[in-house]
Length: 120
Image (cartoon, rainbow, N blue to C red; front, side):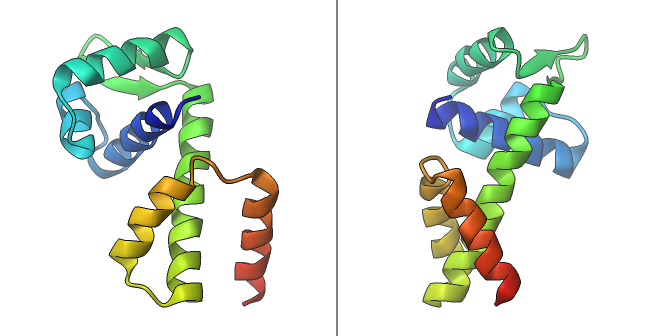
């Protein structure tokens, strides 16, 4: 999956967690993208089995989509906390960098960071 697809899934999960619903306009605002960009991305995510849109035009995560989105979100949270703790930068800077790192980091590195965070 491409980085942008992961960003969309994570945004959908975060919006659902905040509002208990998610529409295309919510995603557009969250990611600061156009509604046509959201439409295009939703079509791809739907075709890949990550989302479905219900009769109320709510964007919903499938089980596969929820698992992927939760994994991305968990990596983001872990990396943000790790960067704050290890470097002393503020949370905003750490979060910005975590967002970039979360898409390319290997699972064994994530597991090592989890272990280190648990021990420290």
